[in-house]
Image (cartoon, rainbow, N blue to C red; front, side, top):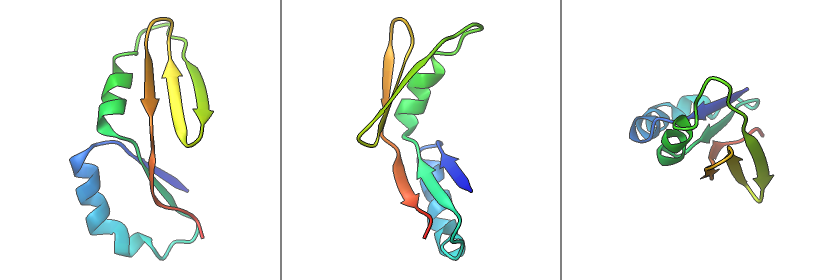
Length: 80
């Protein structure tokens, strides 16, 4: 199971409270997406959007015809 967090400070607070309880799950990965990147990505939304995705060296690049956003996820927990 993978949990993606993207709420900035509130995600960090959630992780601080939940980390000890979630560490016991061997099949769980928790990944935080930076709030700035997800907010920038939200501006891409449109009815018939087409996005290109590039994955390289732990970074995710999403782009449309005019703009691009780099996302550097932080892995808070990975499967054992």
